Length: 113
Image (tube, rainbow, N blue to C red; front, side, top):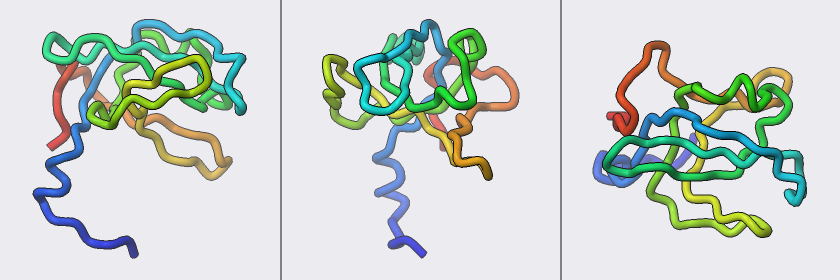
């Protein structure tokens, strides 16, 4: 089991819902990946990320999809690209990433509580 954290520790992680606006291939990445732009609502605006989700998703299946992202990590430089949030997902039995998303539409920027 992982180390236990307090509620205050959990509250520091900003997990927000956003809608995928645009997806492009990321050929410079070491492992197959996409560049993903997401609308996190009026408070946070648009953020971009690199995501290794090419096994399960195509750009067409991602655009318009609501996803969960960690929006308060520091920016991470990935080759020539600056990743501004972390897309949340879990590994399937096939070892590909399945994105975490709400089962009904919610406002962009909604925070996981």
